[in-house]
Length: 241
Image (cartoon, rainbow, N blue to C red; front, side, top):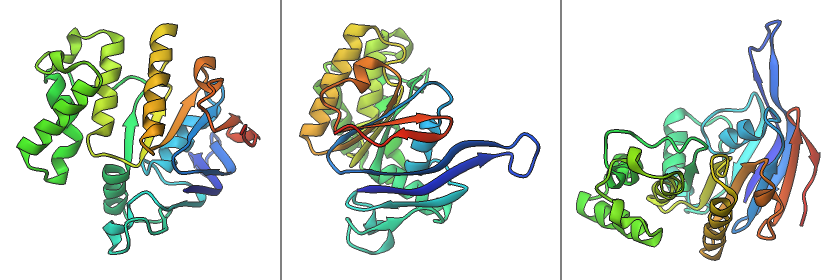
């Protein structure tokens, strides 16, 4: 469970150009479900995702994680309840690596290294044996039908292939939660539907999925367990069961 309680995020605080990107948002994201953050550009959905994913801190409010396997970082049971709001950065980094997998709008693949090396990259700081890590990465590439490109440079791939590499990279540490920011923004309708078919597989595997999108193929999908609509940093609508 991820619980967001009266969370706000402001920039340039105390200045004439102060901007409230997220304003007093409260919501719950259930484990093993697909939650969509829906809204136009500038609605605050991406900022909210960065707060939930431990990539930024809220200006106020609380975010509580439970059942995602992060408790062991604090000497507790893996599924213990953890409030992340005021944790030191080293703990936030640990939670990001162990509990979350990120799929970015621009893919953020590293040019100049191979597809296989891109997939392995997030796992290097965890100290996993290189041989084990390589086998894990190759298995993921096979799962997404791109193992033939393992030694290729990412710049030679199509948009759909780059997205599959990005998804494999997001899964390399076997996270409990997948976070995707506008994952279909650069894909045509066919590839967008293929992406949603992959999301169905994540749900079947018991992973929690959070997607920010203004694409109807995503937010109108029957796979969505909850749709949270945002505008101007605040919630418009609670959820769609």
